[in-house]
Length: 138
Image 1 (cartoon, rainbow, N blue to C red):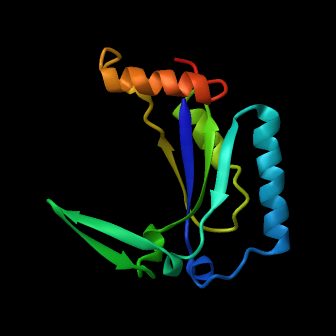
Image 2: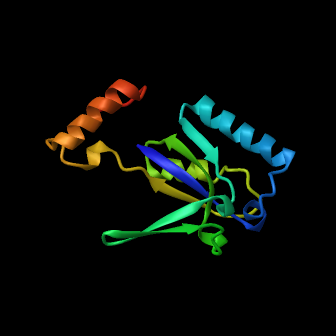
């Protein structure tokens, strides 16, 4: 199962303050541990919300809202995607993220097995993933 570990923004990340060299080194070490354990699928940091936008949908209409967004406690600063056998294993990895303070949210990623395998759209996605995602187990 894939899990996403989401790291929340703080005032510094929202101000565009880059992480310290020490934090970058610690994160690199953490990523190395994930890779050595064979669970690492990807990771990225996100720029401050001031460089982003939201698209809000209201029925058939939509609204574009440019950042920054004020509620930093609800913004995502980055993420990892890992392969774990259970939520407990994913949480155990989240507990090891080298942050001094903040929150790591652990969420299971939806995959085709969560849907009706007889559905033609699901079958197309499974076929695409089988061809394009190394290690995808249909």
